[in-house]
Length: 476
View 1 (cartoon, rainbow, N blue to C red):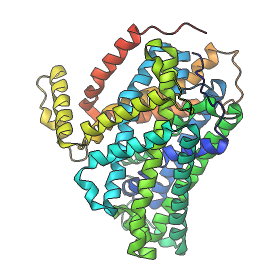
View 2 (view 1 turned 90 degrees about the vertical axis):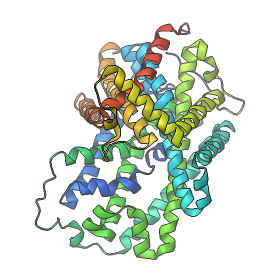
View 3 (view 1 turned 30 degrees about the vertical axis):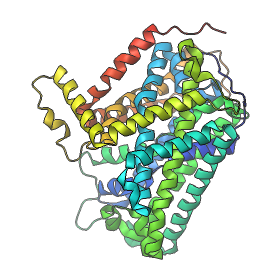
View 4 (view 1 turned 135 degrees about the vertical axis):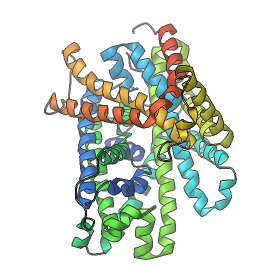
């Protein structure tokens, strides 16, 4: 696969790359996941260790991607690696699923998080949440179409603002002197986690670290890519791991173990206890900024994936075209358009009814005797439209994630003469650890989704048909 060129190559510095990575990864999970994670254990150190383990597993993946990105610095990242390892059809299917449900579903879900927290400050926004969500996407789309310089400035601004706010939360959480009480286990209980609880905790933590891989899609726009991209990946993810551990320490320090387990909004409660109600209200603004940063970064990286597909398939050539300001306008509009469809489908009452009805009919086709009312009967299972989409699409994404880790090993055998400026340490142990963690998440996501995975079957079938019928471009 060849490299599509932008009108402004090599414009992203190592700092820009790190901001993109942090902007995508640090979304809302650090504000919402810790109570559930710590609730799976009877000792706070076990919950804290799970966040550390998640960071180490994500770091093993970043090492693998650092080798692949430095060796194949092309738009599309996984699209390129999968194509070289398994063929163009597998690569196209990955890009197709990213475009139709994975990336666009994530963008849509994050836009609703933005609206939810914005309505805390301006309640009238709740009257038309879908319209507000789409309006936020259109604004971010306009900023990115304005050019690469504008896009990276906005991304850097959102990321730095987010980090300043999180730094403030961390500082406030450390104003109270630590005590041994925060590390005490629950009274008269074992320190061992309940059966199966560790799996749920680790899945939540790994999803909190998810998204770092998307940053490699912009490789051709990075200055001195073979040095800066691996460093941005590793330094950025290391910083995120340290930040997550620090924020969890702040939660424990102020709220205590029991208080954190029972909290519904730990960041707001920390601010309220230490500074008062006015400070708790500022956390809504922090989450809004965090959501916008994640949306902007996902659109930025996702458009480069579509640019790579457009370069390889003449029928989709509009995606490879860059405007005069150095932005892939058609690719960005495609992502934003599908994301708006996702918002209408999963974020409105009529859309959710259609989504549930379609899922039930697909299940009836493969299991006619199955009681489809049981699909959404579990109160701990997916209920909202976006939860249903994420549950259905996660196994597909995680399967490709696992295949990407294995691609590093495959390419070591099939592309032995290709230069590798960065080599993953402790090969093959490191990629095997990454593949094992990704495989664990894939298996767990299948268990969680159950028969909901049939919702992606029509999209997979359409992707397979397109992969077989579209004619690739002739090699340069």
